[in-house]
Length: 335
Ligand code: CP
Ligand code: NVA
Image 1 (tube, rainbow, N blue to C red):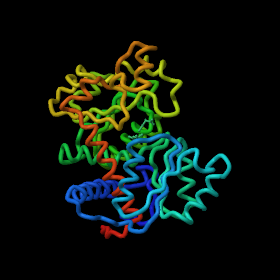
Image 2: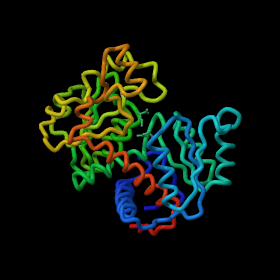
Image 3: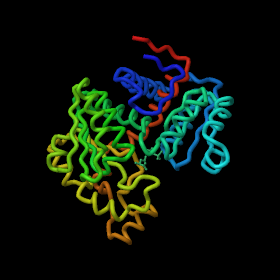
Image 4: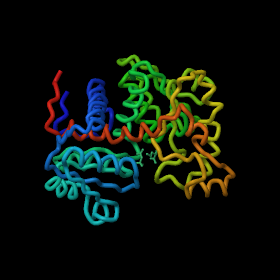
């Protein structure tokens, strides 16, 4: 395993052992935090947090994790810097890399985060692009490990928009880790064929079973984890009408929980979620489409199966692990 100086841009850049290490390190750092034991592996460093898209969890997690690790976080929002408007990604990367020790980037383009990594000379961490959401994955598989004691052989069923960043990341991460991944989505929203092929290649090695289906009854049966995400991702806001029509049969509700035939099933959601009318979008959707909940019903969201807030807390511990492993002065065995 080699983490020092490496960027975290997509899960496929890491092997099974490395992903396990990051999950286990997250669990360890979580335990230290709970016991108030200092873990200042980034003492004196400076971290740039670039957010082209909005965020609650990722921004909060990177900020708190940076401070806990003894470093200084600097938030640079879309309107704060020249990136892309007046200055190229390459030039920005060179400047930021000469001042900061690590860079987080959230935005639309995977190419931008890759260019930042190529030209900055410091570790770059992907805080979400349209293609991948890798830091989310370490938190999600940590949550699965905490709930089931393992990730291998667990049936992880993702229902909803099968081609968004979270679905794509779950498919690849699960395949690498030996978690059985089912993507349950309408055919128009299946992950692209090359990605399914890549997942199957990993699954052949890890023993994971990969299924992509539009059949809800078969798809969710014996799920250990029922996972969903928003029907309309950031940047796609014009697509609400189309997605509601496509995805209403894929709403996570009590009937779907019953179809899992598993009393121990847990519900996960990367958040934010549309489960009531307590948001501007929620109200607008209710007025326009007469729909009071979208991807998950409020009763499931508040049920004993729901673990999404534990999952959200785990974002902080896992982002801390990613930063500490790639930039910190901690000993990592090279077995
Ligand atoms: N899950 C997640 O990435 O949340 P934010 O968009 O609030 O960062
Ligand atoms: N698929 C969602 C994830 C948000 C964390 C989006 O990209 O908006």
